[in-house]
Length: 297
Image (cartoon, rainbow, N blue to C red; front, side, top):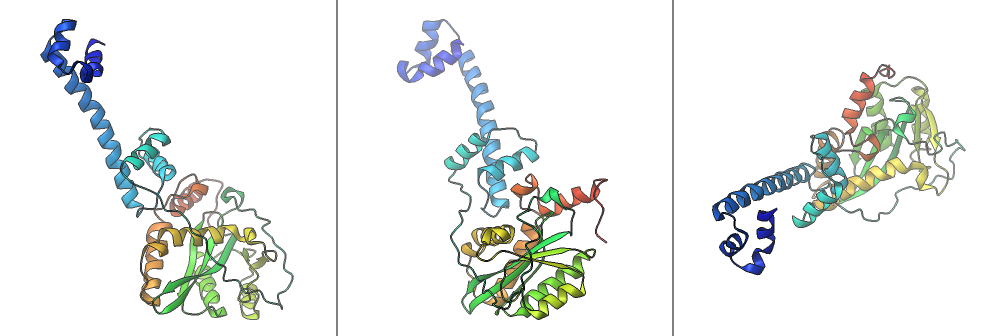
């Protein structure tokens, strides 16, 4: 307590020696205590700063304090989220903020009145793997013009199981993606595929593909974007964390960047808040390892 008092009052007395004399303590003992205390605090702070910097860098500069805090917990470091946020502010580290975006849905006047089979039931634990997928299309600006990305996401794990980039929005874009997902995942008959009512998803060619593989089609209600919120959220994340941070000179370059983001980072590394801060691939591994979860046929 005496040493702590000297350290606290040092700016006032302006002389450590004077403080030691007044309190009848050894100056060398004070300096030994001061060095030991300072190094312990600094070592802890430096370690936390280094870990925060590393995790932020590994996230490609996208994580804010909630995900960095959860990543630290995964590594066995127990600290408060407020402390992480304070360190990030001191080090000028920030997560990525989302921008507003426009929609690409062009509704078809010939769309059949399929029901919304999901009813916004998006919680991962509510259903087995490969029992419900969602899909959508978004746009990405390149120097050559617009590129269009179509995806298929497994609701049970938030994993992107199919994707394709093209310079058009024709029905072949989404049939290619769906065939990729079906081939890679081999779901059992009865799988639900949910999308908005865009003309590509309500086309005869796409409906025929679904019927061939015994996939049940589910469509969002008109003008209800939240009915397909998981697909919309993924596109918002991809644009925030990748598209808005880099130049896309060509559609080919866009295709390469999307592949790297999805297959290397999003599916295998990025912590997902809906999955208790696990990456989709790790979450699937845990589900498949559980005795109550059977692998897809």
